[in-house]
Length: 80
Length: 400
Image (cartoon, rainbow over all chains, first blue to last red; front, side, top):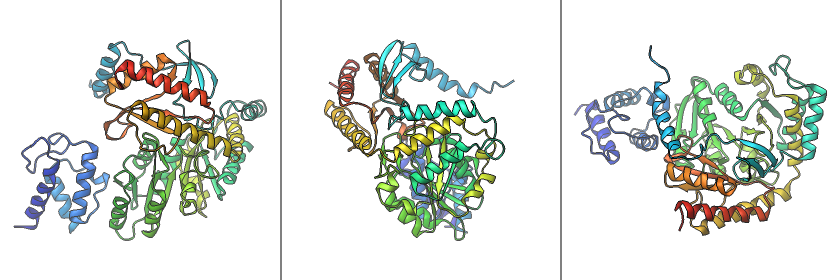
């Protein structure tokens, strides 16, 4: 598995506990509109992502991240 | 043409639906007459005030009122100018001196509101390469200060020391760090573990700003706030406060021991590009602050009020924001906005005013009836308040 697909797999795994509606998640899934996450859910999810990848995702960066794919791209950049 | 107001349609509809039920608009109450810090006339009816933040009851203090009148006579109704141009009078320096004495700190800078104090200090000191790490439940003025500036914004879970520490450790090497905390969080009335949080922040090389808006005058031996009560006030770099709560007028401030603090007067836009406070306001504030230094008895009575209301409401069967009373704010948690609004109206009919608070001001989408006590509420009034909560609670089905 490439680095990116490993990152994607991990992100998908971390989304699941918060995927209360059982949405089929792909790279194009949008956090706000499709998963219908509120700000507290986002906070908890981001905390888990940060712990997993040992990075900081500021609110400024979060504002640019709409979809799962964009999050994976951002993580790839942060890890680099 | 796209109507720029279309984006407000969901809120307009929610509001219309609520008012259609015949309920009094909770966000449009008029106080026709104010008799004292604890009593006003609303809709022609004598109403006990339990939602004013007037913690120390200074608004009708005879010395405070006299100082305001004298300043009005001697200095006129307003300054018509910025602090850095024609808007600094003797009274502005005097209130800054009163703050330095109150906090025993080297510097004090007065803004036109508390909101502007947060807006100004936070947006100015944290620059593009810096990180602001803040509690997720921070007040709107803190978030707006972040939005006005260019720093990277990193929130952490409310009052979670470990979450703060983890984020501090991940901030890139060489970046400046500002941790923003509040002493008392105004929605639930809970207190922050400042001692631990400030220690963790210092250990990781961060500067710390604490907003003590809801604790000044009341919490701590000298009323300096939660940082004083927890013994770490000397480790806090900036304290933000307001005149619109315990001090009993309007205005905001920042106090600090930072040696370069005074430069903020030239670079802080919400300080420079607005008119300064009227002379009467700074005169009332200075008088009030000096009286607050010596108000241990009032502080004690306010604690008693807070404990009694908390215990009484619990006994009646209400769900409260904190297990123990931690401040002068007692938040009653309502199941939803409709019930909250009905209960709010029932209390008003009984002759009691509290704040109805709802998202986005509240955490976790809660609807709250927020009660803030005053040192001038008598024992008798607290008893009346509990009776009114019992009657309104039963009438609306909130308690059995």
